[in-house]
Image (cartoon, rainbow, N blue to C red; front, top):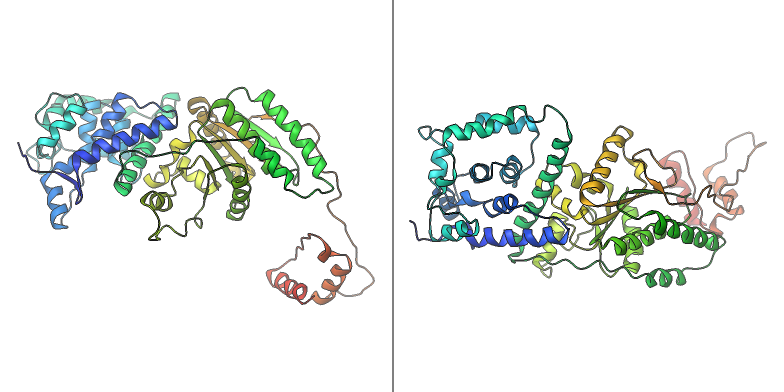
Length: 482
């Protein structure tokens, strides 16, 4: 037995990393209402065990050479758990998930079990060092072994385990869908725990509670200026909130279809507050199509909630600051959803749901035990509506997530209960058309600017739409002069 220390990286011993990562994974799972199975915990506890190989330890010491530790670690997990989901989460936790054909190719062709072949599975596992720290890991796994090779089945049994993989995925049945969800959840928790432990070097991760105070809605409204439509907006708001209280009795997909200008942002957040309190959710996620809207709505959310994370690719300018804590650097670098209220983009949500990349998947578990507002969901490509809708319903059924789809033009993404009153119409005339005739020629930009000023465009909020960027820029210059 080797009594020397075995390291995960230059500064941390391998048992410390494995045990701490598992402890963090337990906290993450508990925080989002997910229960890790015994196999899941075994997989996480052994996710980097192949770093015990002398070639990896030599690479750490000399900073040269290569030894891929994820694949032999996953083979050991596969042999122990007989669970392909666990094995694939471990094998790909430093890179990206693969589709089923690539998975079959790897397990069917890449590993030669026999010891006589250099680099064969049996010889790689046999080469993993057994040291004093290994006993601690084995004890945590409740294993009575004295060598990692003891966990690997013989060649005939190994081939029997892989036999059923050949036909896997041929029928796109419910089992395959559930496996996708389970893999993505385990992958998300493992990657988040592994990255957090390595970057922050703490044995736990802290989440602020989601605190929703209805009084803050009244405070927000009292700070807004009265207008011609404020009474109409408030009437709509009260009716929608009443509908939500009546209709949202369990997690599901709900729609809120209101005309532009009806105050959907505030209404959506108030409904989400109500739902979070009722179902004791830990997370509220507000999803918008554009970065500019994220910044705008994050300002509103900050007045309603104690802690808000604005998440888009421009929102972490201080991530490299010397004053930033390790936790802040971790959140900024990985764009991890750690706060109870997240205001983010549809592009980020799409990556969290579907991207195969490990770092993109890290926040997937935050969708569990959460309410998600999808603002303007019609921007999703129409060819994706059906699949996206099925994904939302899957998360409702399996993770207890509640989705609120808000827009003035509701797309056919999912069948949801409508929360808005029937036949809501904006109370004011939105447009005035002025037909210019008798001029005999087109107006110049300067003439058009003079005309618009006579119509009072500088006396109130106005939107000017021109046909080209050049004409828009010239009109802007004329308006600035005036």
